[in-house]
Each structure stands twice: as structure tokens, then as C-alpha cells.
Image (cartoon, rainbow, N blue to C red; front, top):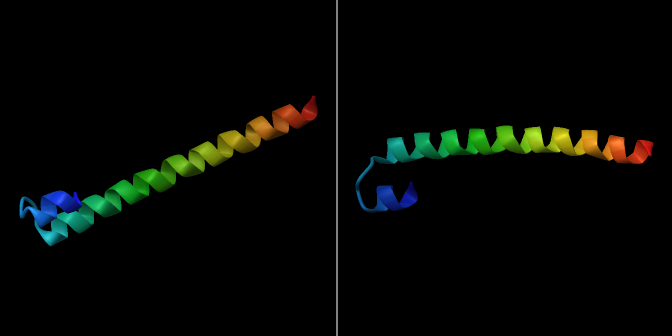
Length: 47
């Protein structure tokens, strides 16, 4: 996205919106991975 902005293929506003969207998705999936990790840790510690 930053390269597209640098090459003037998207506006600064579009770049910012795209980066925000990517960051939100990244945060969402990191939270899901953390939840799965906690479940697996609990499962392993039961044994």
C-alpha cells in the first residue's frame, strides 16, 4: 500500500484507510491465535 501511495497510484487517504484495515485484520487474527494458544496450553497442562 505504501508503494502504491509512493507511486501515486492511490491517495494518502486511501493508503491510510487500507493500512488501518490491514491493521484491524492483523489484530483480529492475533487475538484468535492467542485464544487458541491459551486453550492448547490448558489442554497440555491437564495431562
